[in-house]
Length: 315
Image (tube, rainbow, N blue to C red; front, side):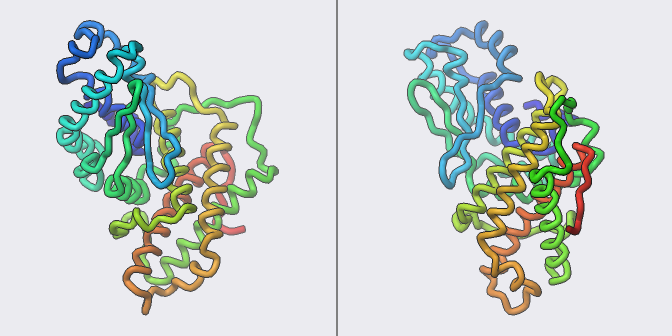
């Protein structure tokens, strides 16, 4: 495994899964899949940075799809067998991968990642990777607490200006700024309510994936997509840097998902401070939502500063 130490401290799910898929190509016997060892070795060099892997919509699941078997062997007679062999190798490498992921990102993330990863194969050679609830919860907690979502991370992001500058006077900017300020308001209220929600304080969210509502799922998926995009842009070999228009669109889509998430519980947020007298299950649900708010605020702050725009705490 690689996990280059200076390239991806965002713990991008897309990059981690791409690394796992690459590792699965380095072990096992592919001769029976119509792919010689020499051809596989050459293919590995070509596909690493262009690994066909993307998140797809799958309801209340977080799923990535890969056509790596089809890319390496377009023959329908062998692509399915190759996908099955890759899946088998992937199961064998997860345990060793956990050690290396944990070593790179720290003990707070990686020790158990992938143990609940579901690997599905479909004709003619598709590989579907479904992130389990435990892995996703660990990822969310790591991202919310991680100290890397700060201004000094701007220096490693691959960014280029474009002719279409993001307009500070636009409705999009107001939506983003409003969402950022709203996040701050919620987090200030949380701290005043003795939730002690800070960057370094652990957030015990428990096993809540089954209870996530549609608006929460949509926000989580947008958070995942945003982190994936930023992490890919931080790679030194990134072939196409993000433009200011793309950065602005990432921020706008995240702000829209956050506003929909916030609007679902218009009567809940004001009533949760302080936490005294609240049922344990309700407290756990609120903490889960606060974690999403904290990560949203940090990403919006980073994106706004990346665009040299203000990130207001009040509106």
